[in-house]
Image (spheres, rainbow, N blue to C red):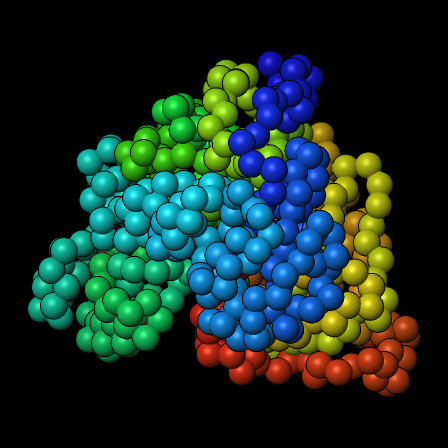
Length: 509
């Protein structure tokens, strides 16, 4: 039984114990959550910094409240200001989206202490999966495959001894935090001292915690993740996998489901492992268990668990027919999952492209500007989750994700073709963006054949250059209309995800 063709579990529901949801985020995910609230008959409240005054997410919500200056530390990362906005708006629940405070257990506890419903997993589960050393130990105990590695004593001497047993190449990795920060690939023993010192320094600076672990490095691994749902009554299900191997700087560019490399046996194994991982920490709500898959041995290994909704959740929604954000709200309200694992299956193939305000020809450096002309594609099997509208200004204070374009079709070849057409029909003038790059990436023969790995983009597109600009774009650039935010300017906010251009962005995985 497939959800699209049977009972519509997205529609039939009891009344929720809250009527107003504060969305503690911005951009496209705030717009997405507001839409889910509207479809459930809930009132939505947006929050915004001074830099986001008038942004699309403030216009689609039922109410919008300012929470501080553009610096994230004084607005989107300020727990007291967000809770004050919740009190002023009369919100009964808080949805954190992704990025910012979404995986902050202290924020979740503060929300609950304020008498509000937290639309996310239990804080204890967030802490358990947020600590990579502890998470490795938990996964080993739960029987979830992990990479050969070391967690424990992390003095230079202890790490060197462990590295000799693991073998090279290996990854020196921060035990706290995530997003690729505090990570170093080490190819030989002579590189280990410098990698340990620099990774520890970055981890202390970024996360306030300099602890390190080691893991075997798989140079051409595939990144395959599994969506899980758990309710507050102890029921756990997986919603199949997403292939996320097309990345740059450990940031995903393209996601798809089903993965072109999995067969039914391996898919079932990974789903079972993901459910075991969620159960091991008493998880509830939506989460994603990420794995690295060795295409040679076809063995998979636990990477981490994202204790929040993922950027790429629409891919799963398109192939399962479930609205994950609505289910986040319903689970947080105490509703039981009314379907079984056997009720779910993947239907067709879905592909998502992330559209960023960035320059792929300049190391994917983000930029700003104004969307002078914006036209999204339309048609059967095409979905757009956008955080901007025509005329909107885009500053470089925050993650430069503008929108997500999703195509769904009966099979992978048809989905790729539908996506190619959709990208070609997208018009975005006034901002440097990655649409041309995405077109070339998806047209690459290896991508078309499903031959992917996490280093593919940086290896095959290192010297990519855009095609000659169309006349309309040249005219817009020459006129300089409304360009009040210069392109390719890094954010001055030290808490911005682009304060360190080499790092992984706050909006993340």
